[in-house]
Amino acid sequence: MDFALIMFVLLLATGGIWVLDIAFGKKRGAGEAEPWWVEYAKSFFPVILVVFCIRSFLIEPFKIPSGSMIPTLQVGDFILVNKFTYGVRLPIIGKTIVPLNTPQRGDVMVFHYPEDPTLDYIKRVVGVPGDTVEYHNKRLWINGVEQAQQPDGDYNYVETGLSFVHTEKRVEALGERKHALLVNPEKPTLYLDSVAQFQGRENCSYDDELVRCKVPEGHYFMMGDNRDNSRDSRYWGFVPDDHIVGKAFFIWMNFSDLKRIGLSIN
Image (tube, rainbow, N blue to C red; front, side, top):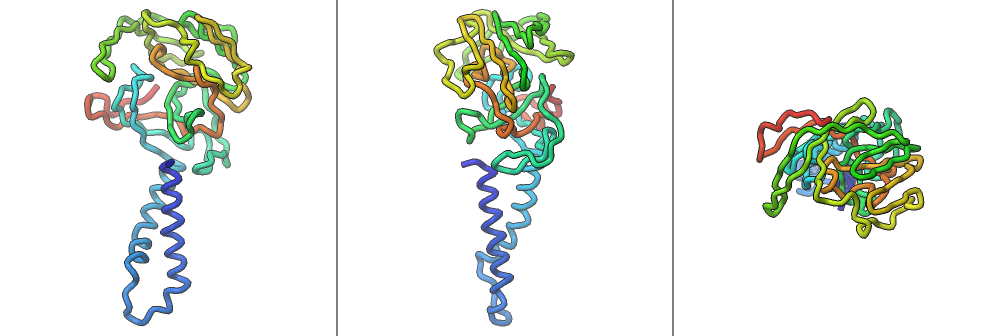
């Protein structure tokens, strides 16, 4: 079950008990102690309310569980996500009630996974509504313009299960915004048999070395920075606006690498 939904149910339950006690608690005799469940509800309601509001409208913490965003994010990074960058949204249903900004190419964004909205994913925005995104021979084109890549040496890491991985590190420019990415020369550009039947697939075309998609209105095309170790919009399609959680901006802890504490996310 979604954590926000759990918090909302607890908020309603404790708040409801408090309200009922105000309405009917006067029937207790003078000096009679409150039932334990009333006392607990009154104690926990303010705490739950504060946590619910902070997580729903301001900042929410997440932990990075996989290597799909290496080198930008490492497995075990604890990050903070700004919940109001893209507007104030109603908790649980994700509907925008106060529009502010929209996701931009290059943003690192947390969202509800379209194939299972109970899961939260994190990837980089590479295509916004109306864009034509093409990934061809491990190069990215946006609206027919190749996004420049510069080699930046080798990058080696160890996957879960102690598997050693050798990759090439590159710096890619999405417009004027630059970020690091990894490319594994030993892997194909695309695994066609892993492409799902997603809503809007008619907007995409595929072959062994190419995926090209026209991003629909109200949707975004996401990719991991670890390009050959990321299952992303190339495989499961577009992220609708109401699935957006927020923009990742800060690493506040990594117990395996304390040097990462305090790094901003670009």
